[in-house]
View 1 (cartoon, one colour):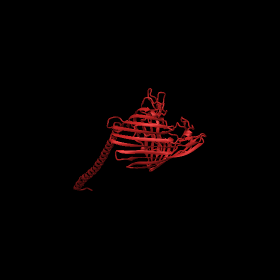
View 2 (tube, helix red, strand yellow):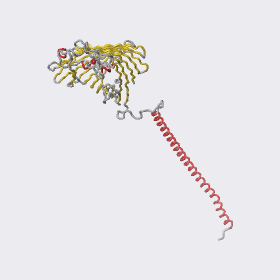
View 3 (cartoon, helix red, strand yellow):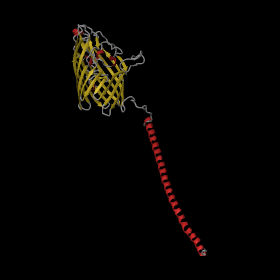
View 4 (cartoon, helix red, strand yellow):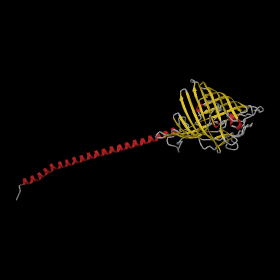
Length: 466
């Protein structure tokens, strides 16, 4: 069947119009989708860029912080190695590597030069004797009317220079620990040339104190609990008031609670040998036979007025199978008389007090013909007045004495009955911790037969404490 030509023409035209209308829409839809995708991609790229940028910033900050930490450490190390004065520090590691962490280490002492001229009436004190270094009453020669001390003699020495070390620690629980050791150079030499005045004047280090304390307990060597070191006067001599002073350092175990302290201390007995009515004293011996420690107890009172202390001592004496016992009491203190003056004092009395007083001027016990021993009574004391003229100058006046009740029927007439001494000094401190002192002293030792020997001494010292 033939179709009309107009229909045939309209059909292609309709198709063309349809294509013309649909094609732009499809193209438009494709373009919108692509744009949306492009927009999303662009947003993702932006967010990634922000993340990368943030990470780079963070990394930069970390690097800068690390650099700053390194700089601080370097500066700290430099400061430690080079303090303000520009000198390098000796200490670059823990000073107590084997000690408790956090322990505090301290060090101190003094350098002391002593120079003295001595004049004795009844013979010379032997060179090298302790009596040539400081006042020791038992070394004063007593030789009777015919004795001659000769010309005065001079001694210089630095043996009493001293140093100490201390390590203190407080635990997390509040417990207090302390280790302390103190030494000087008075005690002899360590080789053939040591301890003499020929060439080197070399002297050995000697132990003074060595103890550990924890809270209220102390164990080791230190001053006897029977001794009040706080009452000692300000002397140029090592002690000054030696005659009437309790003076002992020894091993012990001590407990302190408030003003009270008790201790068990190393026992020892000094014995005067049996020598009935002899003109010369019999030998004095020291025994290590004791099996009961010395018991000491002390009570202290302190205030703005000064301090007061009273102490007691109980002892066993033993020589072989022979024993005796004794006891003593000591009262001491310091009384302030205003800002510039004070009085210091000590009084001691007891049975068998000999070893504890005046560096053993008297014996603890006497021996009879059968070998039995008997404790000997003794007493002693001192008084000292200290006056401060100004912040740099001070002075002291001192008197000291001791006596012993010897039975001459047992020990003879040649033993020491008593001693006494006077001392006066001036001490000048031109710079902090530096003392320059001068002291004059007179001492006397008397025997039971009334023979006496005198000592006169002028002593100076230069002392720097640190």
